[in-house]
Amino acid sequence: MQLKVVLLSLKDEEQQQAATRADKSPGHRILDLPQNVASLAVHSLNGSLRILIEGENTMDILVINGGMPKGGRTELLTQFIAKEYRLPYINISEIQLPLLTGEQEQWQLPAVISFKKKVKAADGLILISPEYHGGMSGALKNTLDYLTREELNHKPVALLATAGGGKGGINCLNNMRTVMRGFYANVIPKQIILDPDCFDYEDGTLLEESRDLVTKLVDELNMYVKMSHTLIVPRE
Image (cartoon, rainbow, N blue to C red; front, side, top):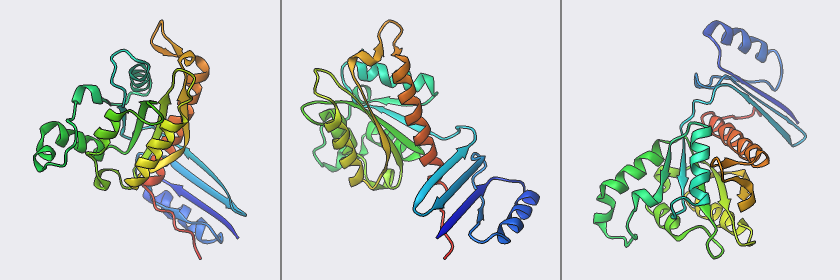
């Protein structure tokens, strides 16, 4: 079965004309999108899916730095992404949520309430963590445990790990992906591990190849964020 879905954000008159053309073409649908999405086209042929999105990046994506050391590579990466793509970020070393004990009063702490509100308000998340002993940092896991599905259900999430000592970083990514699945978050396929030699320490940025990897990751996250605002239902 061939399926072509075309989604456009158009003026009323243009929408009516486009819908008329779509109705005359079997398998076509025109759906309205939020104004901050210029266009989205989906083509499916024999199980092969291709997605194209164009438009301005006006989505609210929040970056969370799961590293604790000041001046470490995880903080450097967080600040680079925040500056390069003009994104807000949170350093868990600064908000310092206490060890979660499950006591009711912890959920009323101003820092906890503020953190949960920021995550819930975001259209998507970028989680960054060093790999500690085969997983994400314990501090990041403790911070994430203050969240619920209410903040993360279906929210697109991108994952990055900083590695050192020749131990990879893939276990950190797998650990974060597993935890995000527990929240029913939508973790995107693309993920990145950055080793110590990926950084330009003189100016606090990334080397060109690593920049390209991060750009592609952010672009894919934007794509999933825009898709999450639109429900695509194929015709029977």
